[in-house]
Image 1 (cartoon, rainbow, N blue to C red):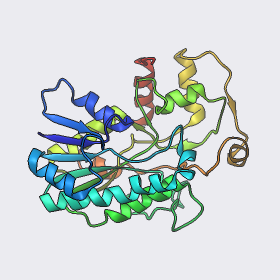
Image 2 (image 1 turned 180 degrees about the horizontal axis):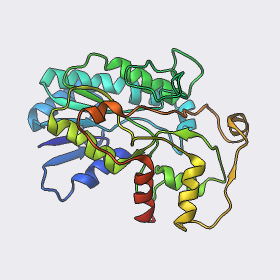
Image 3 (image 1 turned 60 degrees about the horizontal axis):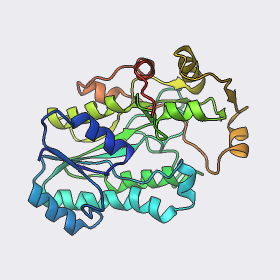
Image 4 (image 1 turned 45 degrees about the vertical axis):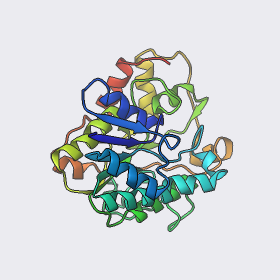
Length: 290
């Protein structure tokens, strides 16, 4: 087995399965029902039996339909995003397995003081240690703390994922269905680009560490809506919240992360991804409805 993917039929794990299916590359994507990877002994034994070249942890807890649910199911959120990465680290280090952990860029808010994007060297500013954040963001930041100094490990930060397939988890699908939208500025990630880039990290022996795996650049929600309308994918008049305070009063339970991340580290490592608007146009022109 070349790749062992944890996460079952989750949104990101399914994207890995879709990308690898039909390539002839031996891989397996498992859920906790199939292999109890929440038990370090079970996972270590499974790694010894299967001997994958790489493990990819795409398991975690995001809440359904959105991160507001994490405020209710805090124990599940904390375990999936902060405890589980440590369990996987233990099993991988015990067996000498190279691995990558799908993290989140939602541990930041805004930009650096000079207006530039946050780099991997910047401490999270939207987490339990700094201010009032969502429980989801706080748990993801803790997960990265658990992995500090991990051996033979990549931490790949995903942000607001989307692709060409209509799905409740797809950022583009969400925008098309929302009654009202907060016009925030964000770095975002096209899932097929994310999958290719993370696999390239493993294949090319890119230095281990943390990477902001977002498409270069940033975009506003209003710009994405304009692109959706130009493609004629929906026929509706979109409405917007006045500001974030208006959004919190009328539509949300917990604060959201809106931020810009710097993509320079993976670019300097020789990896490539299209710019954010190019990736959005690709997804919309090849849109596949559910």
